[in-house]
Amino acid sequence: MGLIKGAKTGGALQEAERARKDGMPVFVYRFEMPHWGSSHSGSVSGAAEVIEAIEAAGWALTQIAGTAGEGNRGTFVMVFRPTGQPMR
Image (cartoon, rainbow, N blue to C red; front, side, top):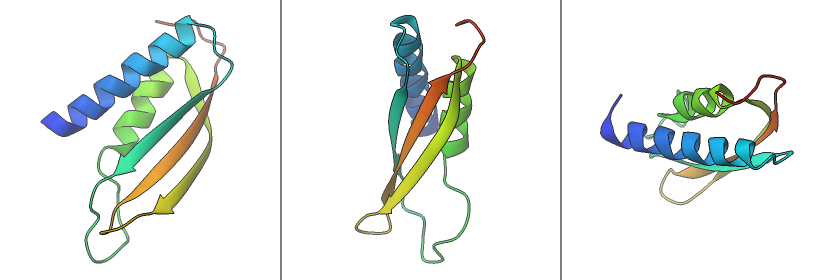
């Protein structure tokens, strides 16, 4: 995993773990999408890793919405709910 992906994933994991420890009933995470090029189709670099990290902290992705931004960038807003598994 690259440096930027690692930083995004690590930050998401820390925030998800804190929210889980605090007993939050919902965790909302904003993911800024990188430049996706001219085709506008394809994988979103780092998104899967961030989702997997948050889910590893005891959350399940329940909703996701995306917005297009300027310069072929955009944002995902993801809503997670706690799973039955205890925090690791």
